[in-house]
Length: 96
Image (cartoon, rainbow, N blue to C red; front, side, top):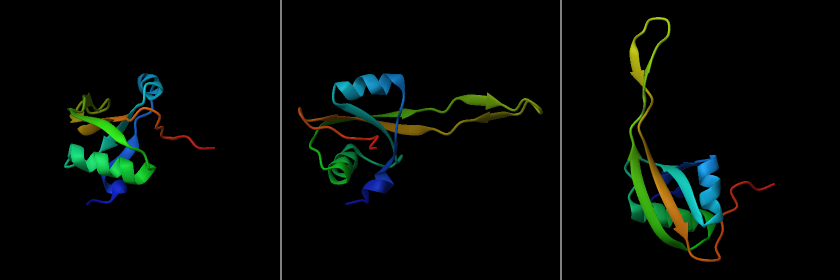
């Protein structure tokens, strides 16, 4: 089993993910080589909750250009995981 912190890179914080958190779904940026089973074990081990479902997606990075030299570049590709927890479980991402 892989280390949970090597699988889960960071949570995604946006208005859309805040809406999903109310429904029990959390979004994480994960390692590109991580599988759904790796993500399930990592979330259960790191946060002590029971995972009901995991969906993953690969996001292609946007193309960019340098303003000064007009050379093309790109933002990095990322892989994200939508983790749905069992009814009643909750992850406290922003602890005081």
